[in-house]
Image 1 (cartoon, one colour):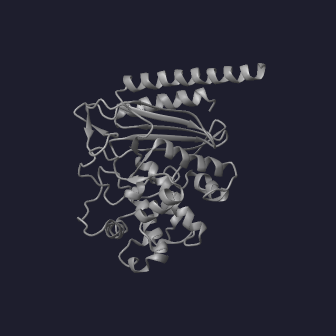
Image 2 (cartoon, rainbow, N blue to C red):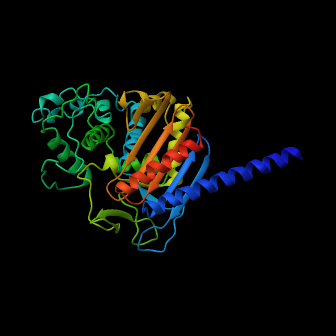
Image 3 (tube, rainbow, N blue to C red):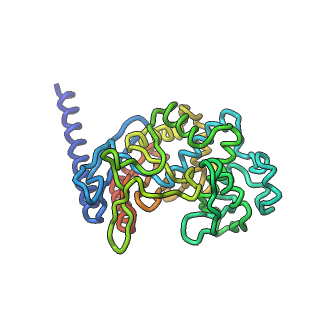
Length: 359
């Protein structure tokens, strides 16, 4: 009887702990004018805490649910690297494969400084590729054709640009365009488009229900991203004309928090030495194989901690994930707005979650 009583007490204590976190998260949401926050704390097998708070849009009464979808921006990079890793394991590519080994016909019109760039250079932002992050980007032609055809035209253009210099103070240059070039290598080696491979790996094999671009909010109730203009949040409908200038593999997926948590759990399991969809050796390389920024993940060592981290936004949603590689625990925060207030609120919530769970 005492054992049963103890279990009940621990469950009540855990529930109370979670409720306090929910109250804190909701106070952050309100204080920083974030329409919706969904967050989770997970280990390799379970969700220690998960919640959805707020509303789909500042202009709608719809309340948040754990079935809501969020655009994850640059957190897409880890998922693109994950797909590529699968085909490296299958022998279709090597991390050291050179870009021009697959596209020799492009070499003549490309800058000679790119001659030796490899797949892992592109995924770790060490190829010196122009960032293509919006402001100050070179003027591009208006490419025609299918998305894969446009990516090829864009890739050829990118390789005619002067490379960005790396040095000790700048060990990598964060580049969305580099992920397009890596994706072109994947598409050439497999004979399949990135879109088809997203469907194959994440939806057919792993059942994660990944979709591309913004969550659909015109024909069903779901999240609206919010841009920030003239000091105000503005809800953005999913049918707004929008594209990422041919860098979709670097930042254009949407997913439910519960399914994204399953993806992160695969990574935690691999980091703990367990094989699953990928081998443990591959997970180690993705997260820790390259200093500073590995393959889809910032590789951080500080104060005795080991972290894999990343954030993502395309200007209307903001997502953040931290994986504590030593404790085997991850912290995930999804929001449907983006401005300085959103970022600050998310940082405070992340700090609180990590304090609560000892990271």
